[in-house]
Length: 314
Image 1 (cartoon, rainbow, N blue to C red):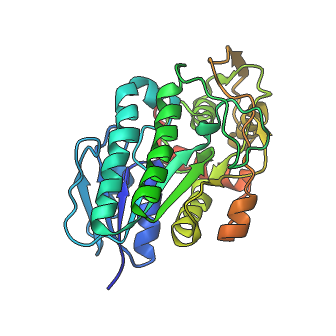
Image 2: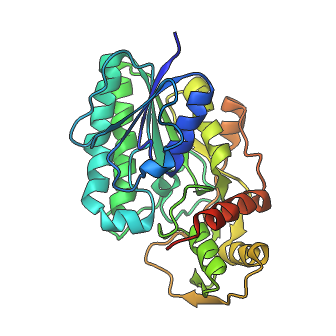
């Protein structure tokens, strides 16, 4: 009998790619999403496929999935600054009550559970690159705190269930990820730059553009999630690209690839926006045998083509 995987947030950007990947591997997949930031359009190609089912549920309130479950991937959460500013309380609830409900279900079903945490647990880091042993530099009441602290609490809750109940848990800290199915208006750098470039609008870079990010293509990230479920232990593991670029370099590369006439202009840097962000992925390499394979230019071309295809509507 094929394994049954539950994916919370499965209609979101990363979750939809994960559902697709698990189905192709032969798993039965139940996708749960409340569609606050997810979209049925992301999973429309999966409806009607053998082994796929969808349930609209707010997991901060309850989760109901009948029958045996072997694996739970907990990805549900607003994940962009635009989204968690718009839904601050929902973000905190899904990271606390939602995670509690996921862990309770995993305990009931005797399922292995993977929690999608984030590089945001490191805050504006004083260590660079960031290792899993780094405890972070986070403002607990700042404008990003609803997301940062929900994920930090989520990690603490996972470890409590692991230590108290012996639950088989995985914690994955996801760094900047990009690719098809990102929303044009989600406020993150790559879709912002691409949509502005395709529309011939000014490309807006916040700050002087020297702040860095490390961008991982979603297909690489999803492979890491699957490997983490199979091979990781209970300690956190970073997943992301360890090649670092400034945001100005990203903006210039997107302008070049789109052949855009847009100008690059600067806007004030938001409060608590990290100056640097790059994962140390030594642990992922040794424990999972994982490293990203898709280079930045290849990944950006793929993402640009996606936004061209959907019309890059903002």
